[in-house]
Image 1 (cartoon, rainbow, N blue to C red):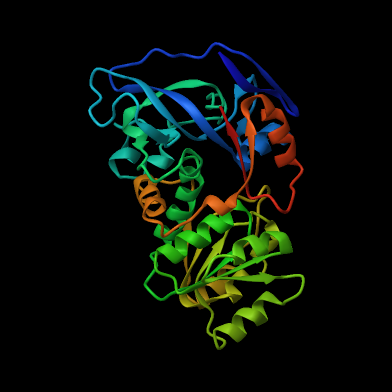
Image 2 (image 1 turned 135 degrees about the vertical axis):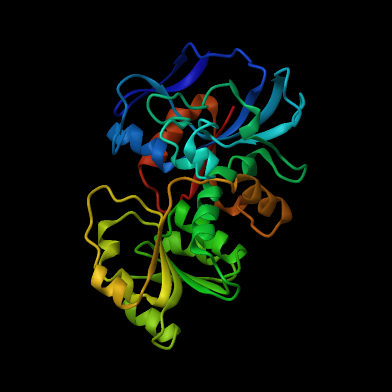
Length: 343
């Protein structure tokens, strides 16, 4: 079956590849409609690895997807042929300790689309567990369905923050995930969310949403800006979503005493944390790795109209143009948030 294959670092091809399509009793076979181009996909393309996950053999890319059910297994009750769906791409061992604790995203045996050595979904058809396949409401498009996966990361961050209605927040980094975090924080009850970055184009995209206040840190001292806006108290929650090691310098200056910092971005190198400053404020610190138990909630928020992700889709490519889509994503155009590929 034809697929977008990462052959090795900086080498993509559209070619036939053998992929399993046998439907088990609890599986569904899905015709893929739309796949988002994620930063992790691009990182595998440009670097050949993310931390310990190294591309050692050809791998099909893609993990943000929507499609239509073509066939169901004999034990599947929640879906039927013809259903429009989106898929949660990480599948754990449901008998593991992590799954039983409800933290299946950190199950060591989890298999995740387009994470070596697991193939992704940039191919016309896939077979996937029905338990991690969600029916799209009629008012949610395939394009929006493929946005549920990245929005789920924002939902995980907002959930870990334990937002109290009326809280204020700062998101460091206005990339796709940073914007998703900001929107999830607003949906979770934050009264306003500041978002910082170096790039005005990204900040302009984030700033089109009511309640999101962009701050260009080339033009403003972020510490002084937050102090001014909060009467020297600090925000209730800081979300670090840039992954830049420099973002950690002085990060505890932005949060109020007793507040929370949620680490969402993944630095490419070890970083130093000022634990004394954290302790002096008794700051609660949380980490995020993908998501667990929020996918259906993310979809429900999109369906409700309370979260509109459609403005974040800045380019759509046909399947035969997949390589061009990845080349554009790798160029880091500041006007782009989410590129998608339709099959």
